Image (cartoon, rainbow, N blue to C red):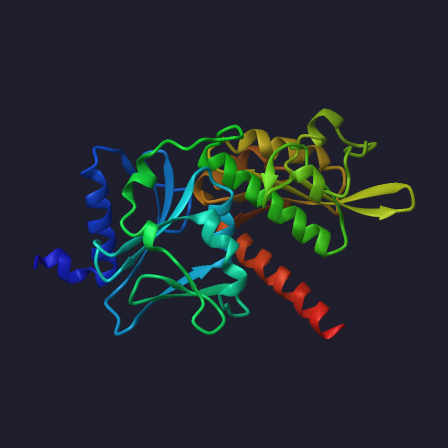
Length: 311
């Protein structure tokens, strides 16, 4: 074993072997850097890779709800469970697995506990209840076959952008704000962003440029009678430049109660652009999108807990 191999965990070695095997099919394999999970572009598929070392009777995998949500919104998503050896890998369409998640235990933090038995079937709740995975064992052709898409194909960046917008809208709704998003047809968890926003047409404000205001990624308002008072403004910046989004939010600068939030994974770039708004730079806030995911998960869990105890 090489010095580098000794430094890697067994799961990392298994993942590397999986990726090496994928290249043997003469296809492109590349990490999806914008996602924090171990996800790769393989041919026309987006593949989340999980690995577990040899177990006595079962293999155990953790799968976070936030990761599930991100995968569910991608084009042609798969999850690969490596069970001790690359030759014992379940390659299953993600959306099929997600249909069975209600039958898989999870903790309060949204971490699903995936158990796979010695026959490589996924253990479900109930005595001897299993998801038969025989057809998905080493099912490499599934990854290599171009998908039949019924909807317009979107990039990973565009998909994640919509997910982050959706999370912001849901957090705002949970907190009792009136929410607006300009992207009507983009989807989050199989629902259009327009459907989960509470305001369909952006309110006109006296002290802002309406053409800029109505293009801000997400807005939270407080309703006071027939008026909508802006409270929070958000721009999601992943692969695009920061300046235009921050400039759109700056149209709300006359509303002193409103702070401006940039959701991204590039704080260095944010700080570079911040100097262009020196007169209001203290009102801009940077949030790493993974932290937003944690907040969103906490808000959803709290909402569910309140419903459970009726308080």
